[in-house]
Image 1: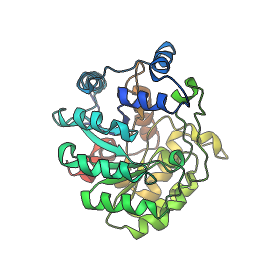
Image 2 (image 1 turned 90 degrees about the horizontal axis):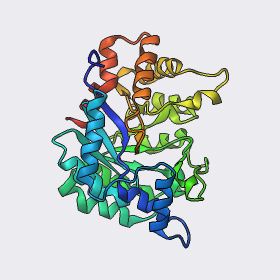
Image 3 (image 1 turned 30 degrees about the horizontal axis):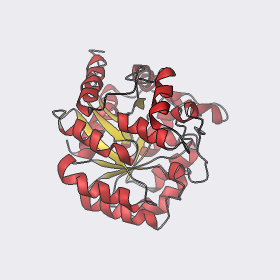
Image 4 (image 1 turned 180 degrees about the horizontal axis):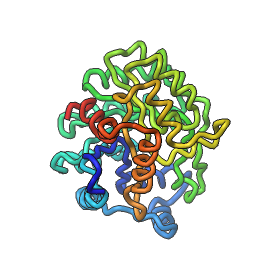
Length: 304
């Protein structure tokens, strides 16, 4: 991949040990130690409790795949310290975003209390996972903080599956009623000073996703993952089709490449990187514009 431009991945999950402990704690009456062992027996490599060791392995994966920098998610509030410390000590390779649950104000207060130490760059909202509409008044408190701290706001829309939950006997899927991209339109319009990001080309709601892009110039497209959502379109869409339509509506400068890397032993999603570079080529996106999608746009958005 030496011919490729600098890559700044907008969507990776750090998945520290704290993430897996949190998942085990969701099992009613479960023994966390035993459940962690169960996950390991299913082939999940549970990281060491020292986030710096996991940081080193994570950065080695970036190096092996030609990725210069990456946004790393604290996918649950319990991960904020681990992800924050890994990013703080990464010598500018990792940029942390933190998940909060507006229905649990303590998670927002936690982010605020840690900001001076860890300099989070983004806030993650998962309406389907936490069971609230994005227009819920409780979200205003979170968005006020995002505005005060100058954070970008990632809003998960579309299908959401946390596969590790199936190993624990929990449903890996979350209801779709709070997953519609169009619900973000009034929120984004009411907060023109904030930049919002929708991942996965809308995660199965591609037409709604495009509507949001047309209506809201402060919403960005995150290309993350394999994007198997094309099977839900008729006729079926392929990855280059997603790119063509997204460029047409969002324009080049509001599209951010993401791999959706998450966990070991799989490691960095080089298959996603290769597929998306190929799709951009097939969509006849100029080389300079590919460079913007692969990192230039995110550098500008985060001012780094």
